[in-house]
Length: 206
Image 1: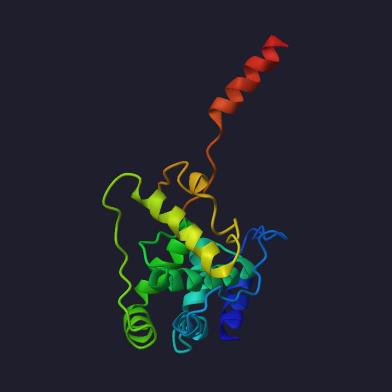
Image 2: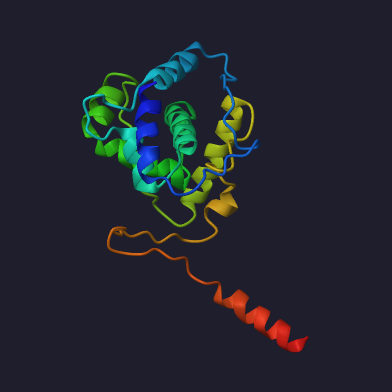
């Protein structure tokens, strides 16, 4: 309930585009496809853990939405998926890799250092969950593929594509992010120059 309140407040302030959540991507009620009692206990602990601190001026959920200009529904869905990723980090039995959106939630979670290291890692799951960089080319792709496969194994179907794109799409291009002050700068997408040139020549030939 608290997360919804914080997100609703943030929604009124910053959101500028829809979340693109269609029927295919809508979150579903998930239960674990595991007979291991420890898995169910762990998953329930993670689901019940609140990422928001009522005393924080800008709680986790609101900050995540504001920093990424995400909608109410999308941010709420992403937090649910982030918790499933945290579960996989412990239960999958192999190295895991997040989608870009999940990675934003993970980075921000670690910035709330007391909540992440003390309350979550220390007191809830009793395991230190470090953010390790890849050690070589292609490792992220392999880890991400294994993560998707383990997601299917534990939850019974593929994760939502608006948060967990296919591996080839996830690593199709290299992202280049920088911090930009939106109060001082406009943000405009680059033109598809190649596509424009092709269209020009096509029209000339016609």
